[in-house]
Image (cartoon, rainbow, N blue to C red; front, side, top):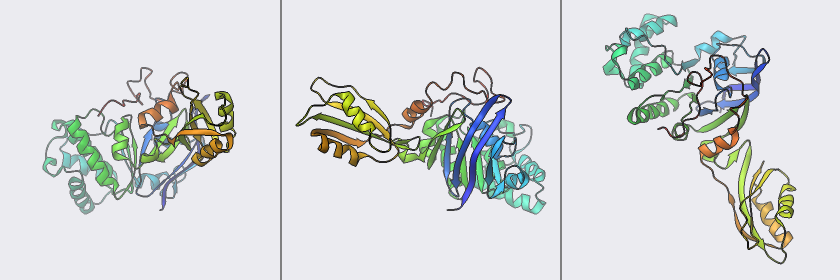
Length: 343
């Protein structure tokens, strides 16, 4: 599949503060990618660089093959952007607003007419075209925001908190709309509602303190984090009895192991561990039992919820973190804390 977004070692410094410390990732055509991270993680900075609002301090990024710095206008022509607070003029009728957006994009009249008909159908706002924007519900205003982002038929969409403030019925409608739109486009969805990512996205990318700390398909994010695979293993005494620290050291000696966390140990000598490794090491853990004369009581890939993975990777990152420009110290503006309990 063609690579639509290619980010390599992207850096952004604001004086002595570093918002991005060397971010790298690729997004292929047709992917819907959830962009997650706590306040100050670097999500907003990354999106602003990709959309041409600011320039990076180092590294590179291309969108649809065009460099975001030297070919900024070509990039903008291929991106549809919906910020959290959509720039919609409440006093205008929907059709007039969309026509205005088309004029700003220098679209000829005949093309504007066809484009408005197309996005009205895509976003299910045909019966709202002659209604004043300010009289629409927030759900319909979000649809109009999506319509303006789609007007020039961009192959790439960047959506920032598209369901923020919506009721459950509106959230479901926008989710379905994003899935339908994403069937023929590449989509980056930045949100703090973790269920939103699980319900909508094919892949999850988590930033923390200006770095990518996890990148995996949505269905695998519970067993993978930071490029690794989680496993859980429990050993009981067999022909020999080993202390927990000896077993822990033996597991740590397996190639690819990144972290070994002992779990609660009962009095009967059973030792349980959670192991993070760069590869699937279940075969090695089984072989360890054979070689050391132990009984294996449990061995499986550990699956965590997206919320658990998020907390594990970002816990404690809010103190001393870089505050992105435009972010309010209270967290009420700019990027917000994750709202995993909202839906």
